[in-house]
Length: 475
Image (cartoon, rainbow, N blue to C red; front, side):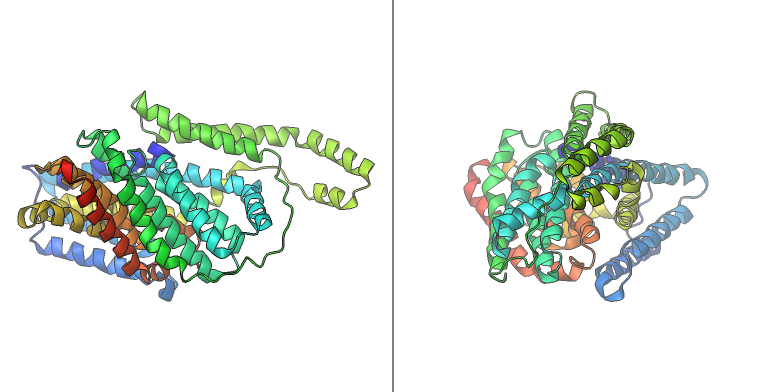
């Protein structure tokens, strides 16, 4: 899903973070009581999000309210002749969120469809059959996340790897939480050395600040960013194997074809963006149409397929097989849509609107100007990576690109690295982390990720130092 999510979110924030674009007509609210009130509301909402595990309150609730309050505050200021300006800004935010939501909805639908067709059950059975220990599973899922995310984007990669872990070790809450943390780190690190791995890398590439081949300079720093925390975390894994008994899993009819349709959907979305310059969500929604047509085919051909299988089972005298065939129900695309993680989608809405509102007030521009004015570029870029764990890396990167500070290629690569991997410091710092909190609810939480933040920070620092030394010729 390479450019898919990347571009969707890039479109989202390239419009929504209006504060990064100076305007003589816009009112600077950064030093007003209205602005301070918006910051307080945003912080309170995030505190509630962080306490999700203790409060047993879904993370979407506080950010939905915070988004409404922030934009109502903006509405009070932009009255009269200036009202259309605030209205346009909000509509831009809402429109771009709709693209993001539809994109994610299609991705989640396909994942749910593959799960219903028992694809992940089959992968789980294969891993169990191989007899991999918990430690090997930890490295296998983390390694796959690192090397798949440069091509298939960090969000989708994390969702797929999490689905596998949940199937393999769902009875071990501690191990699932540890693996999910590792997957988030690996997916974000892997996405940092490819223009297609993360929205921030795509933004830098499209802005012409870094060429396609120059991203490869970040490969080794990205490897270190993942390996340092992973090596330490692996020491805390019990040397045992999943307790689940070995089972044979038969894929449901159409499982591999649905997987192929998912890849075709990805290709369609990428093609729409690269060659037609259309939003990738167009390709994603078209891909949902592929799935609906195939679902229709499965329903229409189900009676004939069942008849053939029953005849074969009767000839073989397989009574158990006959019972299984009697329990088969038609494939329903819309039942897969209904199982999407709506709390995650609503959380994204709240975050997009909150950040867009604060950006419209002028805070993101103020943050970037303060950092690059008072600190060295290396320090500023390193700090922005940490800030992106809380604010989100997309608006931070867009603000930096809009300012266009005079920086060397080495510094542009540094901000690409830090913005891409800084989100790993917190579970809410990246799309991958947010999505996994929804997918592995009750297992992977803000608190379970937070306790590994110190070792993640070691990897973050090590990757920066390696980049400064390895690529010193481009500074």
